[in-house]
Image: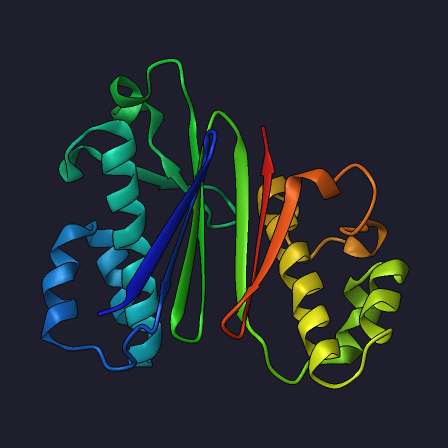
Length: 215
């Protein structure tokens, strides 16, 4: 089974599951009953087992955290999706759980790991990537000039690490703001300026993890 860790900062909660399995087996079949029919259909559409496992863990972890945060039962959680595919709690069916509060959450997954962020009365975006050989050519279309400079100051493994540090920061920012990586993020410098105090990055066990939140 995966290993999970959790950290809480005021209204912000972060969770990480590592060392996930690559084969979809009987244990995962049992977990499917805890997610909605729509989510089950989406999970089972994945061609590769590893993607099924990661999507399933992301959904189950989200429900686990919301159940504890809202002190509710699993069958009381109902979700809708924004146009960009980001899920949110159905206000009509979950309004009695939320009261005057709002809850935002976002999970990201990469090879053998799932990263979840949950925030009360704010917006959140997360991203996690396994650090590997960096596709540096994409920097011209996504990175700010200062971000490119930051990456290219280093060489070898450190350059790869810095690339994925910036990449996950951009992804987390785009998910939090709702812009998506399809918009021109070259104008956004995640290392300086008004955004930086709301973006955090950690390098852990070969992964780059970033979270962006808006209180």
